[in-house]
Image (cartoon, rainbow, N blue to C red; front, side, top):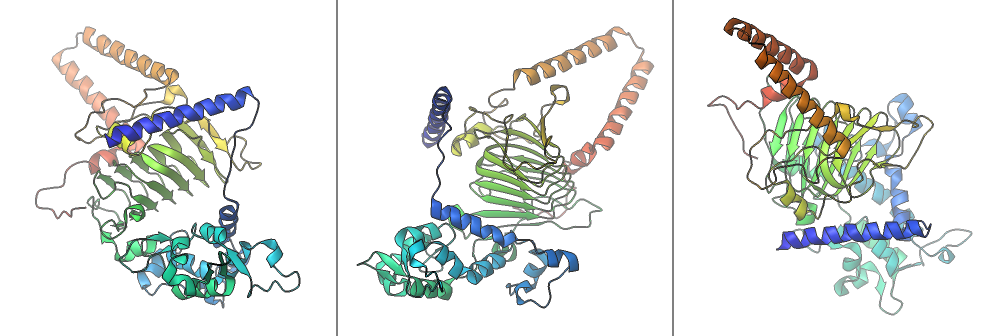
Length: 477
């Protein structure tokens, strides 16, 4: 009943959004968009976390500088987390270094002295601390429930420490900052913690001849539901496939995977794919955001609430989404195509994530940041190049066809191709070949097919789907 109710709510929401869109169009009014102003200010400020230093890019290293030293006590983290997006220690260091600026940003303008900007005696309003919960959350005990920052700051036993005054309903800037600095720690459920102390997973065998070893870990055995994470890094020339409770509702981070085929056939919370090359990702429904960054020649097949793309090249997206895909900066040769596969549990998983088949804006992306070189940043896949994708695994479930079907132009292209195949089969049958001729013809077709598998790279995927030899080591994930 719960799954049916979530799916019903999703359909009603889609219908409501469509009605609002039609109403706005009929009245020539733009759709309403609103955000929390203070949270938006914080969002803009933290973009500095990944600010590029021109000096660093020119000389390779900014030295001497204590900021370049990893905050991690673990040597393995130092070598694996150069990317600030993945390094929770960099996140903590950034917040600590800029905490005063973050709090000052949330103050009412009249509280700032025009001469000295002294904030020692300033007061921080409750709404500002609520906005800060966008970045910070915590717990009163390490194994306890996770709370937003403002709930902890407003908790009666912590008023003296957080600087909250019941009389003014405000916080002392000085006490609030001191309290935060004394208790800020690295995210225990972040990517760095997952890689270093999470449960290691082995979902596939290392393909013979590869030189890199995949790093796959999860924190689902210790993290609260909303903080579940699965991290996959450096998967090289492998086919990985999983559908299990480990993935359900998890935030999935995929990093530096090359020449691989990855199937994650469970309902997912969010997915980030970064710095991957020449790989195919088949995902279960993504409840929130599917984001790609710095990828090259990647194919993504997914149902998702929202897709965003940045700094990618020659990538193909077969998607079903109720929100226009966001094309951010730095992209080249992006191709969009209709969602073209299914697996037995797909519709059930879509219901669990609240995703329906309508509306579907796969073919109507929104270019957020258009540069001079972005005039032809995306295209729609020509129907003549369209093929359906078959998930090569057996599962229990009721889904037997592509949810929502295919757009007419693509369905027509498939029908024409099938007709050509029937004509070819009929021609061969009517040729009345002898037994030797049939054997020779079959050998010719097989050789041509083998050449096609090698040239397209599909042979690697087929080889990796072959079960391992009996007696080989296997780890459960």
